[in-house]
Length: 520
Image 1 (cartoon, rainbow, N blue to C red):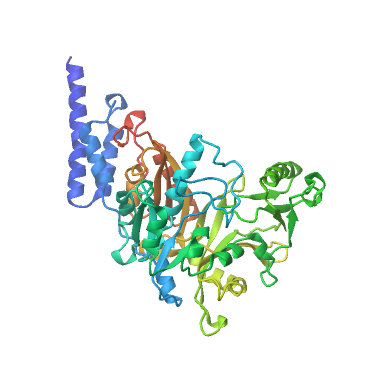
Image 2 (tube, rainbow, N blue to C red):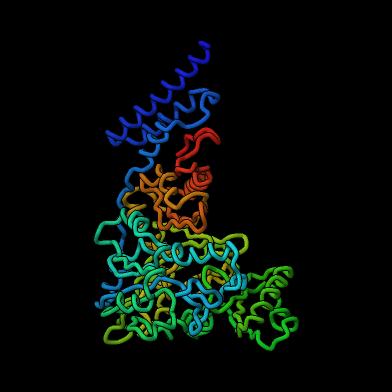
């Protein structure tokens, strides 16, 4: 009996000790000390004495985790870049993608004019969980991830997929003069077209993807031109330095006898209108050729007219996504300002899908000097008809050292926000490297703030988006900084470990599945 009582007392006083320290540290704004000591007590107390977290301890930890994020001051914003590059009009943004083979919502039907080449796996005939998750990500995550970099400009978001409280929390670290003006359109209550006319009245419309409704609106860039320049055929322009390219027809072709079957390895096949490296096949082996031909048969049945075939470029350098801004044309097209904004190293999965971006802020000036001629060569094909953010995917040939453009994205890119954070990471925190990547985790979308609080509180991790795509299943876009590439790798691993922790029904960390790690 006395042994049991002693164990109980040890547990009570042992748990009281970190609670007092945490509250003391909160009062004195020394969060990390309280956190460290509380975890130290967990290591000292025998594991058998800790079976479930007490409500007091959970409350204390949640108070630590709920601390306010540090401020984020961007180097510039999309709104600022428009002003600096000759656009004085009021602007409203449509940063939603358009889809041709799936209806996103009864009020957001498939695009029939400016068609896109989505994966053949998605169709409005599907009613499975994966399609619902895709629709939610389209309405929220895939759009929200751009918000941090937009600045004081009008932008509309759809409700109920985007709740104002969640968006406010996301934007709260920004100073007031760098936050966008959000207009919410409730898909369940409002008529979308009526609301779009209201939101855009008296303003110029700029957008992520052209859509047929825009033909009736005053746009900064005509949708026809935006559609043309984001087509892989535009890379055949004679002044753009590219690998050897050709278009291969699909309709009416016997694929087994086509150039897709007979061309010597290696080569690359791309659909004309895809993003995020979707619709790309890197063919270096015969089994990869067969996988590509199987996919081409499906796209042939869908009615895709042709695909791009290009030379395979061997490179030992990173594959860069080079971001720049094309200004409004001045008295002559030559007087338009083209500004380099940053080059990110692209990350890919083993299957070749885009998986994120890394930027080294220290090397940006050198990269700019090396690639500015290539940027200007592409920009000259846009000036006079296009205004806004743009990106080119660039590879440097290991054999000839030539720089070639393998893709043009005249829109916001995956590296948009991370290019605007050099002050936040490098100048203010001494972190010259940053990485943008998506993470999936079980739990509610706000749980990411609790689970990653030690990183967020130091400004080493920024939450760019967090969406609950299925019940208790969320996706977050995170940007995190490091001193070295090894540190970036370690931080990524720590993020994955924290996000993999089980959550109880209150969204609190459940330590009953294991003792807490002391690594932060």
